[in-house]
Image: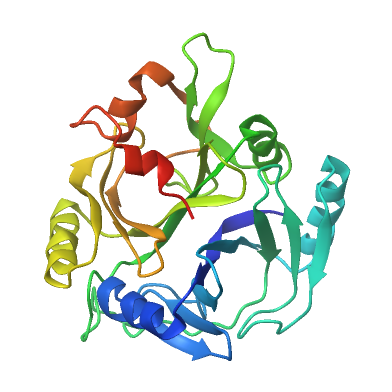
Length: 303
């Protein structure tokens, strides 16, 4: 039994067609399906049917994020563990959304909705799995390899972290603590071998801070900045480095105001990776290593 990885994020957008064009031509995702209120997308290096779902809504934000489990019977086992933890849980029927099988859906202490699933249609990639070239022809925009991580805000970081660690068997790579060490104000967790698959910072419940896409290296972050500037996409933070995760980054906004990130590098984690601690007085350096301070919008611009 086990969670394998972050599988998808469903984002609320106010103009479905404008948002779809942005995620296809600026981010560089491929459209795989659409229905009356959703558009489904995947990055070029992802094999499953989709990793991003855009859902037409009256306000921006995140509807849910989902993790893929190893086997279909894992859903029954996790259902029991999640209910024992005390979270409210429902079943999502097979084919409720395009390409997806059955899922279980529950609400975190921070108010966010999360799903676990096993079955999803397998589309493969244009490079294939036999003598593949390193990348396909016809890439557009920033052209990330994959959905990398999601960062959200909420009040109860302690119990949310405890849930991911104790129930879903995640590990915590980094945390931010108040100077007196009494309260956790940031939590970064991983299930694969990346610096983080999901993260939370102290703030209003049920809010999205950003949805990140993985690019190869620093040059690709700079290229992303050029593409965003050429298309007059609002850039919040120009290319820089994180102290937390050591990642290289640029932050910008989609047409609905959801914050996106192009994220490169960062360290590799292992099951015995020790948790790194930052203190709140150094949070500026932790988030923006060169600038060493946070800008107001980075804290307040949430969806």
